[in-house]
Image 1 (tube, helix red, strand yellow):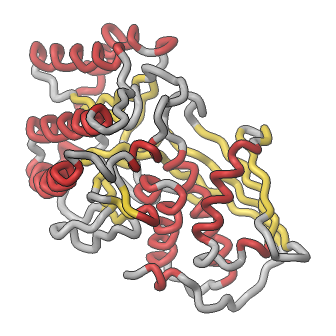
Image 2 (cartoon, helix red, strand yellow; image 1 turned 45 degrees about the horizontal axis):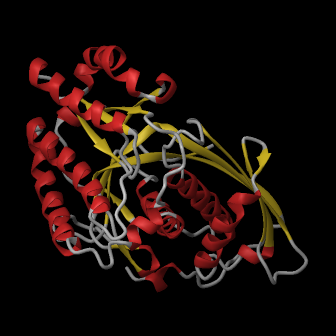
Image 3 (tube, rainbow, N blue to C red; image 1 turned 30 degrees about the vertical axis):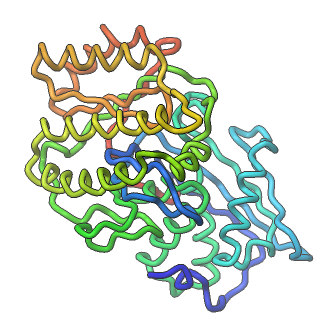
Length: 359
């Protein structure tokens, strides 16, 4: 598909007012994307587990305006007005206006809430932007009822990407690929697609316990970090590595080889942070307690034979990944040895999920 395919021809109906509510989860990448081209196009493909419990619920209420010469909206988080969210939403609206020509026809009230603390350090842009994109697509579906379910989801993912790149991976589950890859049928730089191949029973109901190491604002935003890849001395090799790792994970997911899964996922996490530490300017988002946790996980795995591993996003928090059949033992390990390194002892238990839901 090309971007022009997402520009609607014309709507067959009109609507004065209404509201839609969607709940959409966050996700955690196994093969990371870091670096993007213009228009939120990734430099390399990625694959992620869709989460289940860490999610955003958004209600989008809308009413017809008399004039349609500007965007008109207000944003609320947990019933509190958030004007500081408005610049990001306006940027998003500007990017998607050509694909949603009704945007200036309505005044919108965006009411959103997260199941995880907004300041927890868990990226809420993926869940938040995907939920908002789905609400906007529900309006388009009302205006043009002939839109198929497949087209609805594909365009919602396309729109979500223009708000936050990784948001395009949050609509479906339990594994989603974003970025064109020669071995993934249907893969695209424009939207996320459900992973189309066989997945071994070992990866069913995979667990993700998120250790909240640092809940402060990151010293370098993800947007700036992505931009630093443009002149990065190791960027091209990194993009090749990500493509190879995506090829490798296909057989890993099919055979259920947990040792190879661990090696690939942990390497990807550390490579992501290596790119940050070797950019110019360079920066470090891991904290001392992040490193303590990683060393504890390695030691526990060596002594117990456990298949627990970690991954990291662009921050200090640690995602502890492990098979469902190890849940009791790993949670005991987390409570006994890792919680001490979490800010205020906070962590969130999650599991891979199936994507967004209309409420």
